[in-house]
Image 1 (cartoon, rainbow, N blue to C red):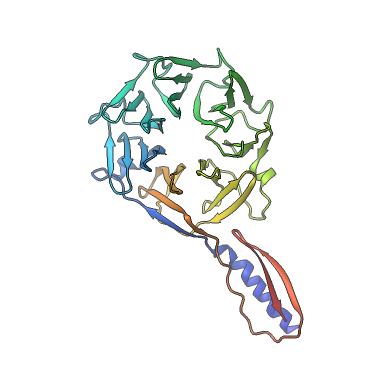
Image 2: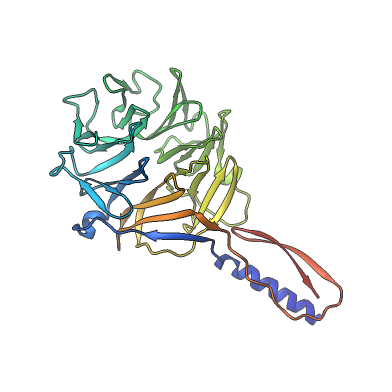
Length: 370
């Protein structure tokens, strides 16, 4: 009996402490633009990465910044003539040139200067550009009055009046592997493919008729959506709830306003509460990556992350309350945690117990002799 109690104590100790084991991953907190106060840099709206792995960040107060891993260049309304310093969205076109959406119009950097587009000199229906999505050299711009597509010469506008766009306020866009363009709106999701529209909302699916926070497509034909929860629409059009239909572990999780990111292998990354757990989805299979502690101040309002060609995940926080952060996670350095070593000098009687111990990043079979 005494030997059995020792085994039970060891197993109990392992299980109670297993959640303290962390994945191995290199995480770096990069410098902020010099010459600006914390108040000026604490609000960040969006981020994207160009083909040179330069990080572009849309700030609320100081314009748009380009970070090459060492130094920053800031473009604002004074030094470059962009329409406003509150940059809501930023994306990169097929020529590796940035487009930004601001509170007062859109702008495109051609490598030399910025070219502005407003309701006065273009087909834009509104000057408030919530989102910019570059489909090669076709530039989609989501506004509060529908979505515009600019091919370099002609503007085409889509609204609830002339199309099946489900809501005129468009917050995010993505392109799936078949070539369909997805629009996340204030009232659900629409897809445009070969001039045919498909809509998803609470009337025909489990996706709520509420604001869509992000949309991302993977290489398996799935489209992932964050709203009240995390949803997957597979290639056949079936809508799944990530927590109810895909998640099978015992760790209690709740959804959050998580941004989504896809790597160059087609894996999809999300984050669910608790926040120190990153999810990597490969089609409908997932891996939970328990992140090690990292330095970041208190924050609110969600976050934005993107993955560069070197498999580095970059993250910004929308609202920060103690320090301004630009984080990078080297996904190449990731390795799952090694559970605590079970070591005990037990009297061997020839009896072995085979146990399967579930861990947040690892499932391990362990034999203990008693």
